Length: 263
Image 1: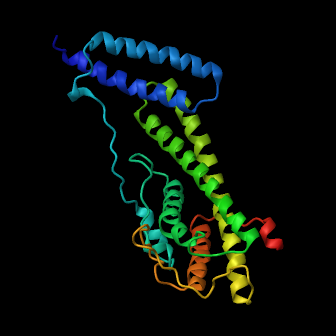
Image 2: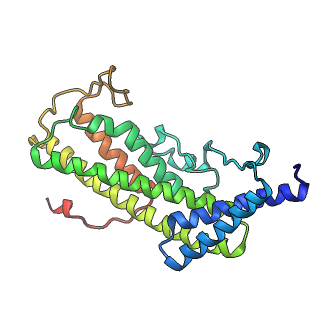
Image 3: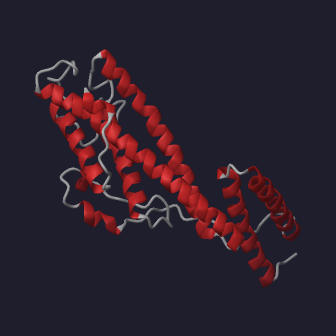
């Protein structure tokens, strides 16, 4: 059975609505809202099945863009020595929040360019500092989960058609944005404080870094080199602290005392 133009428009609209309700179901903690959304989603899918008993035609399947776009905020990081080496990108096609995009890009650089050089295989730390460094990885995984939820909410909000759904998703987007920014800010300061201690210890002749006279060399059989390849460990740690200091400044994060500052 061929579809009329009106039916095709209805199918596209129903797919957009389905995405909205799926977004609410993924992220909402309100039991009443969840149950209502599940009921509405079932009605939408039943209607789609009624219109397309043999499946939605490929030409009508809604696809979201996967490419990321460069953002103008790159101009604002040009003044930073290390941060300016990298590019700020949108976390999703419809994220126009510079603060979100900058924070996510900073963590992307942190994970891809810095972490490989800062692990146990390259930088040996004393027992207590090594244990603390290991604890940093769980924070990054939690941050990435927050990012995933935020991306989904932003895209669901953008595709929303009904006003009531859009209002619900707007509230969710605001809450997820606050949680994302707060968690990211705390992690960056935590990492800055940690590597500042190591950096100061090396400068004063301490022994918290056990191989401070070595050079970071990646094993090309198992590792992908980063821009820190071939640098002396004191320089790598100094650049690490500097990158995090620049990130805090670029994000305009307020300074608050931490436990590290009393060490």
